Image (cartoon, rainbow, N blue to C red; front, side, top):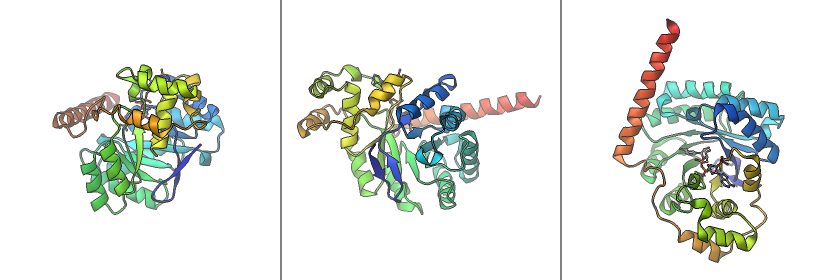
Length: 295
Ligand SMILES: NC(=O)c1ccc[n+]([C@@H]2O[C@H](COP(=O)([O-])OP(=O)(O)OC[C@H]3O[C@@H](n4cnc5c(N)ncnc54)[C@H](OP(=O)(O)O)[C@@H]3O)[C@@H](O)[C@H]2O)c1
């Protein structure tokens, strides 16, 4: 396993396992499988609703907690200083741990400064070893780096061969923020797993398209957290440290960049409206559920 040293000296595995869209029913088994095949970094989030299953799996795995790099993310509904702080303490309870290795602000909306102050404080008292953000486009990232007391250590954004985020990477490097790729395979959209260029490169090394993609991320210095619910794919995605893509291969992959998100752009005002509506809707549902409970 390769390790990346963050700007505060904390070492983070460059390859981890992500549990977005892993159901509560499957999550415990998946994380146990991932730990058994050798992953030592797990990426979850409050918004994935599977922190409890991640915590149970870690406990059951009997892998020493200090050997696992555990990440969660604070959801927008919990932004603001007080709410964010309380939500991280709740995440610790669900994850059955007394510290996080990395805690990210999931989205660059609403009162992220208040939430950031909570993370800074929890970092300073040792509840979190590293703090960062997610989906912060360069403008928001530079804003936070310029005005916050503690600069983020990581920014987790969409990165894959069809959306390589070269400009965002340059800004992160300027501010010493580690780039972490979410959807490192673009979730397989646009026929990623049968892309002819990636398949041809893989054939040269006896590697699959998934392995070529992960190797490309690693050689760019990016942290990756691929998701799979299949144990054999988890294993396959780990076997990427025994070959090196040539500079010609790297250039061919660089040429696949469409510079367009396969999902959505966080700087699109319509997208921000959609997020705001979703947060409002969730709040309404939450209040309704609470009232029902009190009847
Ligand atoms: N911060 C954010 O806003 C954000 C957003 C999205 C994701 N994330 C994080 O990033 C992690 C990864 O992103 P993601 O889950 O969206 O997408 P991804 O890792 O790019 O792709 C996952 C998809 O690829 C398939 N797959 C995995 N390995 C494969 C292999 N070797 N061969 C063929 N297919 C394979 C999986 O199928 P099976 O499961 O059926 O194997 C699944 O459909 C998430 O789990 C989450 O932790 C963060």
